[in-house]
Amino acid sequence: MAAETIGRCKCPLCSSDRARLSLAKSKLSVITCNACNFQGFARSDRSDDKLRALLIAEPAAPPADDPPAPPAPIATAPQPAPATRAPMGWGVLGHA
Image 1: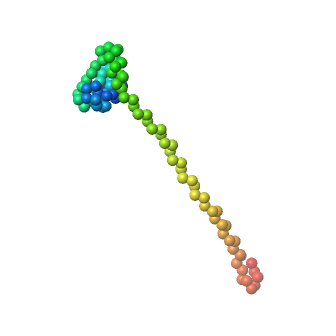
Image 2: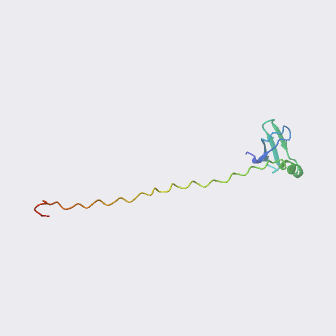
Image 3: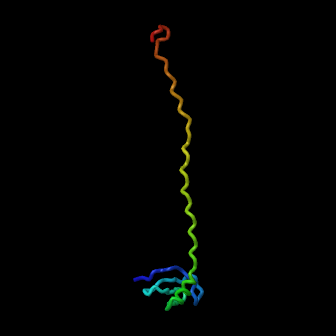
């Protein structure tokens, strides 16, 4: 069973800020530093409070940007109606 990670903290031995603070089965804090292979265990509530005081506050997530607005539709001028054609005729004879 993997330990529940509480957060990141500063290693008390090598001052690396990549140390991991997690909970043991006893619900007390355990600090593990991969930089120097240090492990520190809280044995009482007082030492648990001291280890939890080493926690580094997580930076707040930047606010999510609003999605861009869709492009405005392109306004086109209405197409002019086609010119009506005069009926075919013979012109001179006057027939329509």
